[in-house]
Length: 134
Ligand SMILES: [Zn+2]
Image 1 (cartoon, protein in one colour):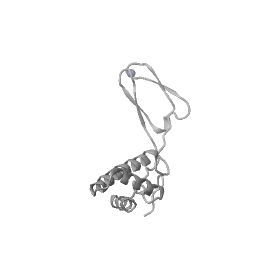
Image 2 (cartoon, rainbow, N blue to C red; image 1 turned 90 degrees about the vertical axis):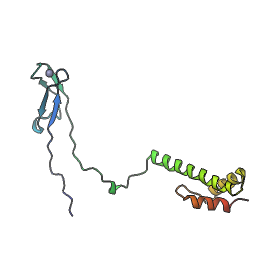
Image 3 (cartoon, rainbow, N blue to C red; image 1 turned 135 degrees about the vertical axis):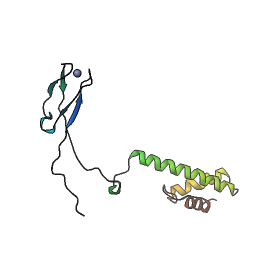
Image 4 (cartoon, protein in one colour; image 1 turned 60 degrees about the vertical axis):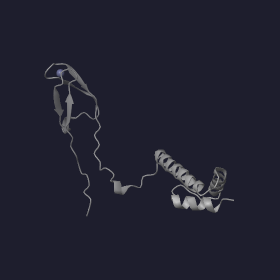
């Protein structure tokens, strides 16, 4: 299916007087976009300053289009998840009777040898650490 393209759009903007809450509408054709304008409130007669507006209409990126680069927050979450996973792995391995220092040393070695990477499953991490305990 072809995707419709945006050809034109129109925007009416509703403003409100901050003093009496009376609203008024500026239709697309009279919206100030370059220079400010003034409007006199119909109810309280106060002049109101209207700053130029910019209106942009565009399609939202759909979730399925996601190719967005990972943000710092994403990396932080990945790291946090991995830390939790390693803690779980350590608990499991120590339950087999290995000491904390044996597990820490093997874990350190696995990292240096790139045998463990973020994104690994718990099973992989446990297996690789056990395989490298002296
Ligand atoms: Zn007013």
